[in-house]
Length: 373
Image (cartoon, rainbow, N blue to C red; front, side, top):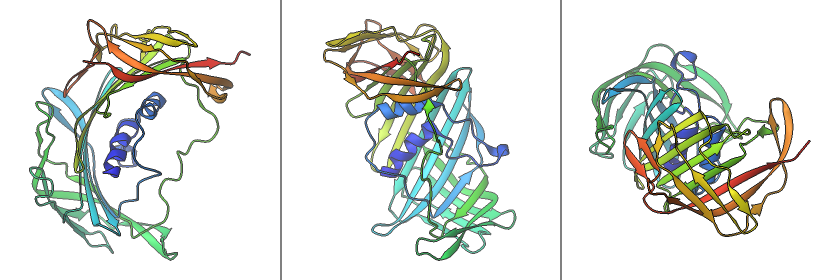
């Protein structure tokens, strides 16, 4: 379950199903405001990075049309070694579309410790077979992989200190059965006709994996104000952030259609660099703050909501950031409060169904103060 939560978030901030080559690259990763939105939500119950999969079967993204809308569809199967519970198998299915400044991404995943058959020739990766049986019923994946050439080997140091090789092979997959039940309809119902161009990899226990975010030096400067609201159990969230000048905004909404120990449905829509600001300049002071979440001319959201805080803000220490090649110093005023729907309630028009702010949500308002000079 912890890995499901991690991958649900990764689906938002990166393209984890894509091949590394440009010919098969997925859409570019969402920018910094998405990460700040995720950071503002309830913390995920995990520490550090998830373990590397022992076996990974990735499929080249394909275009599918659902209800007259085109999506880039990405699928992956991963199997992990667990010293306590045996083998853990995860299946991920992700659908992405972009229309101007609007992006929607819908991720569905399954995770189980039940017996899922994923066998392969671990010395050559020439062949492999997959059969999920009834582990994810009514979803089922069954078929075989055949490499199109010799596997490439990447030397590594194993966790026992010995030398090893991580193998990667490209090839095709022949399906005898393929069905992923998303549980959402008409977007996306039961997905069939699985992708066939695949990449198989085997990790015999190499050390490593991600050790950091790869970014060094001051981070990009945040916008002057942001507002994030989340439902009690984290199944829905709204986010609004302005840029430094307050002339453009970033809107986002997140919804969970299902969440259990074995499966999830995770949906996000966002608009980036929209002209105009949808978050009014807050009235704020040492006793609280009031701000308005507006959605004029948005293709993602309609309606509005109001944030109220009746307590003093928490002031952070001074931080350093970079913008247009210059360093800036800033601190944040963080207000805790509630986001309440107005007469025309705030609503996100997601493909899988409208997400409406029907009752107040706990929320946080951040006002960034930049040092002069």
